[in-house]
Image (cartoon, rainbow, N blue to C red; front, side, top):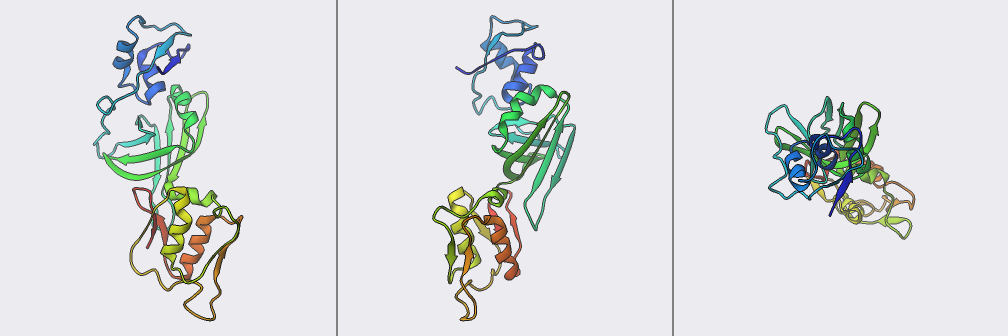
Length: 237
């Protein structure tokens, strides 16, 4: 059974719900699971935190101006400042600020976890949490779309990879697959590399070279843009 320990900053079930689930809507669930505990909750009290079922996860707001961040299935929506950059020439990015420092312990361990960013109930993009900066009064976190992780990933084990006669889509799928990233394409991606002409040498990805810059470099040679789909695929278009 999962549990947490209350502190001087978490003397109510609302506060503990934010720590456990990222929102206050499950305070009644915590209260029922800890029927022998009453507010104000003494610091040091062990609180049982039941796992949420799909029925107990609050619905994502359909308010057209509401921005909701879902971290590994946990909903965070009470933001004081939100910045979202949807790019057609790169990775989507977003940053979120909250004045609720009680969320610190809930958010701090979530760097590099899966996130989904919603606007008005519609998915903007799926991504990865890359930075969490809590302080005494607030927490600021940032994320980018899933294919952005390829910017930190090198070639698969085995050293240098050489491509001869493969097109941009084939090369991209080969390199992205080990990291669980799909690749989508729209339109003509141009001729294959390293085989369309006797004057064109094979293309090589060095053993310590980053995958995303390599793909972007090849795309520029074919007049193709690299970005991401809202569901987390690398997009060649």
